[in-house]
Every structure is written in C-alpha cells, then in structure tokens.
Length: 309
Length: 254
Image (cartoon, rainbow over all chains, first blue to last red; front, side, top):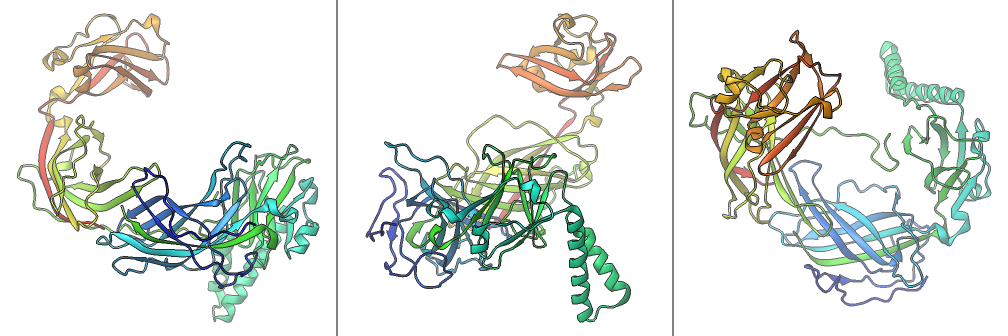
C-alpha cells in the first residue's frame, strides 16, 4: 500500500457549492490490518459526496453523510466499517451516536474495475450521526476511523467450498476457515430442530437461575420456540462460530461463479441464505469472505468546517 | 428477509406527534378540525434526494361524516423568519380518497431556513361529500348502446359533462372506452360499471390520456362487459364540495 501523504487542503470539484477543508490526522506508523486497536490509524483523503439532515423529532432522525475515499478504488473494497470518534457542530453539540457498539462490516457495491484509460471510481462509505442543532451552521469537526475490507489483497480472504449441498449435516472443511478460527456447519432440518430445542433449554435454564419457575418457565420456553425463525423452501441454514468476527459475507454461487443469494438473515447465532425455492444445486458452492490481516486497511479521516444544508 | 447487518430487533417507535390544536374553522356549520402532526424537515446537499418540509395533518370532526375525498389548497406557508414555504406554483391537487373518519394528508412545503424554529401554514381543505347533492351520482342505463354519441342523461347535461362512449368493436370485451373534454373529465371523480341486474363489475385498471383539450379514458373490467351495462358517474359538483378554511400556527420545527 502506498503511504498517503498528508495534504493541507483539498477541494471537491471547482464548481461544487461546498468547499470542504480536509485535514489529515498525523500519519502514524501503526499497523493497519486486522487490529481493533484504538491507536490512531494512518490518515486518508476524504471528501463529502452528500449530506442529509433528516429531522423528524423522533429517534429516526439522523445526519447521513456519504464520504468519498479517493485513495481506495470502489472495485477493490468489498465492505467497510466506520467508527466516529468526534462529531461536533459549531454550537458545541456532540453528534456522536449513542449506540457506539462495534458494528459489523457493511458490504459495499464494488462496481467494475476501471479500464486502462479510466479513473477508477472511488469508494463511498456512509455514516450516520446525530442531528446538529437547528442553529448550527457548520459541522465543526467530524473524525473517526474507517476499516476497509479488500479481499483482492489476500487469497485467503475468500474461500469457496464447492458442491455445497453435499455438506448438509457436516462441518465445512477449509484451510482458510481454520486459519481464521471460523467454524461453519451446514445444518439439516433435524439439526435445526435440535438446535432450537437446545437454545430453548438454555433460555429456560437462564430463566430458572433468575427465579422463574413452573408454568411461567414453560410458557417462556414455548414463546421462544414460537419466535424462532422458520426457514422457507430452498433456504440453507449454517451455524457459524466466529469468535474473531472474521466473516464478512457468505454467498451461494452457481457453477459459473455467479452470486445467486437473494436474501441473508442472521438470527440466534445462525445464518440463513436464500436463493430459489429449489435451493442450491449440487454444483453450487459457498463463498465465504473473511477478514484477514492482509485484506484490511484501517485509516483515519478528519473533516472540519462542513457547511450544513 | 432481513439483510445481514441490519439491527437485530426492529424497534417500533411511537409517532411523536406535535399536536397543535386550533380553533374550529370559521365555517361553523362544518365541524372539521385540521391538526398538525409529524413534521419532517429533510435537508440535503449532494446526492439525488429532494429537500423539503413535510407536515402530516389530521382531519377530524363530525363534519367528516360522508366525506369521500378531500384535497388541500394551500394559501400561505412561511417560517418564523418570514421565508415563504409554498411550493412552486402548480395545478390544484387531485382529490384523494378518505377511508373511514380518520383522514390524514401529507403537505409538502419548501425547506425552511436552517435557523428558523417554527412555521405556519393556512389555506382550505376541500371536502367531497356526494351525499349532499343528489346530482353528484349519475346512473346512465344501457350506456354502451349508442357509441360515438354523447351519453344521454339529463343529470350529466345539467352538470355540463359530455362523455362519448367509444365503439366496442375496437376494444377488448373487458374494456370500456370513453372520450370527452378534459375539463369535463376533471369533474368526474369515479366511474363504475353495473350489470343489468344492478350488481357491480369490478374495474381492475383505469387508463387515461389527456391533453389540455381532450381526454380519452379506458376502464378495464375484471370480466367481459355486457352491452346492456350501465355506467355510474360520481361527479365533483359544487353542491357536493365543502371548503373549510384552516390555519396552523407556531408549528415547531424539529
């Protein structure tokens, strides 16, 4: 990766109504890949593509910002995760969202690779923060980290398990999964039923420890079973153990390598992939995208004096 | 199916309504109240989304009995800094159906100033109450019998609505075609098709081509339309329309 040189000021488009001052955090020597470190990451260029201040007076209100990262071609970045460290308007209101949990990586639309004479389209990521004050004129500062997933940089970041229907009832075997500490089992209907009962028993035990007894205990367990998802025809269910949060995305590919996944759901520790009512054909494969040290970049960004609409 | 990465639990947020009670409108015989509800101020730059202010209004009161449709005709809207919020001049909106007595409507306005704190809007809500005018519903029996001629109906004539049925030979058996002046069709709220025994044939799709002068309309029924079918026109007559002024002030901006 070519080091990014800090630049003092950059303007997005001469005719753009908005002139953004882009400041860059100090370029540190910290390693980027795969760490959840709080250490400052190397800075990257960032500019604002769009900004939406959605004000509704309820908790669906938000300030949405699309950030363009020109140093990272969209065709190379498959997913990203943003962490806002500072967000404040010129009235001093703190705009960092309340929910500051570590969010999962969000898949991005990669687009096609640029031709030899074309400028590659940049990666665009979206972040959501709290609304600024009505009286605010500008975002005084917004800064944070963006983690980028670039699977093309590491052959081990993408593994395919061929003939996936043949794995029903078994744990998938793959060196890349093993290296990432990820265990995936393809559940049969019977195994799913057993898993439901196991989870219900676990809930009952937890409730019992909290003093819930008798009929109440049984009704809690039956309510849990009723709420448990039921796969639709053709859905496939995987039990995924991923203590390091390495799995970015799972997909069903046909024999030609085309993604046939039409729906994804994660519930009660299980991942459900939908394709067609017939389900995966014998020659389909499961593609698992994995974060690996080589496939990740962590960069910091800082924007200052962003005018508000 | 929920995509991976979305929050695990959908949270139902109760609508936080800012109700601005207003005095009953000046037209005292109509107990119709317009109440301000949820306000959404969507402010953008870049991207492709349109900025604007949206106000959900609720229309309540005993005067809503029998109201089949309504529309809002806005006269003025501005923020507390005096900036006008009425959208660019455009045609009067069409009447929209009212289901039950709990009518709601979204009023679309221009974005207020960023540092504005409230806004106001006034105008009239026009109610369509066909029960107030016996001539608002006009049944034309054997309406398809004489194509290419204006439908023969004293009530249509009294309402100055002139409609011509298209020859059926040029259309599928399920389709009834009509043509006439655009201004006349603007006053037709709906058209139903009845069998000879008075039962209704469901219209599954309606098509309309218009210019300033002429309009051609097709009603696509769920079954072949018999040649002895009747057409029932619901007309937006003056007697069936009631106009109620409203004024909403000091609506807080979120």
